[in-house]
Image (cartoon, rainbow, N blue to C red; front, side, top):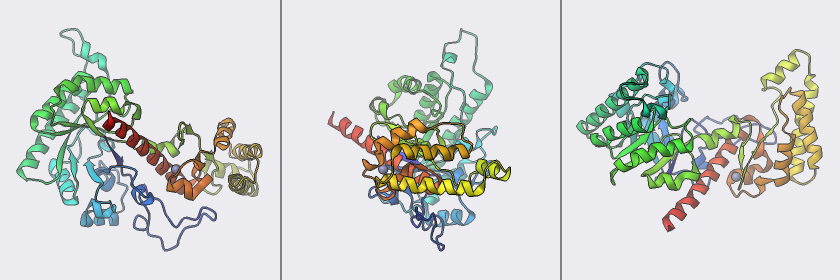
Length: 413
Ligand SMILES: [Zn+2]
């Protein structure tokens, strides 16, 4: 079971100084920054997933890459641009979520194929159109009643037709990347129908899309329905799914790979579960930046909060965290100080109990990853992209190591 990490231009700046919060003045973004596979001794994934829409933008939205970066991406190819070690594989897709609201995908088979081929991808996904509804009950309508909305059927037909065109083009042009067929559906039977169509077209690697919002048992229902049809030579990929508890069952249904950004995003997008410990997750400690935090800036502008007071407490929190890490500051006093600052920031949530648990366990001391060793307590501080993204990288590292343990067990079994 391989884990692909989706690229969203998530890099960290190695020149960033966590004490002064300053960075090298000569730093050039991306070129001097580090990807997760460069930060750790061994890359924390088997490969990367790169969306055409992230690189170039799509449907009126701009991509994550500057024009200069886009140009370099095309000249150097994806491997050189991302400085990928030889053993990492790279999968390309269209980034269907960026155009989910459009009536039709705004890209052509020729454009997408050229992107994969010219940039040196190992695998390239066919163009799909995401179906947002998942309604298994539509499989059990009374005879003569069709509950499935036209929009769902149209999106599935578009996805199947584009896969057919993609395969035809791939054969005719004798392209070198392996084509990955994408399936969209709204129920186990509809996924199964689309899967059969793509397998018949000759796809040996087929991805199931639209699974992100599904519960694990729903994903398993889809897989169970498809499973009897999967030929021994066909491999499955799951888009946007990390359910390590189910890896064994997924593998039993022919799944060989998945991708997910959630270990990274949980670090700074979620309220809790920001830091992956060995046996549980923890909340990260919020120390907002006075000059960046919008809520705090507004409170200062309205006169509710004195700016000097905000700066003083911010500094005190950071100093106290450092001292606590060196066992020179009491836990209770630290939590109290953090609460004082949070109140000043106008926070509505009270994290005192969660902070107390985190500070009692000190889970960053147990982690052997480069990030935790270098940052120590800073890895659990929710503040700015350099800390938050590194915490995300740590989560990716933990996820990958868990997966590797599961893989070893599966091999032994
Ligand atoms: Zn770590």
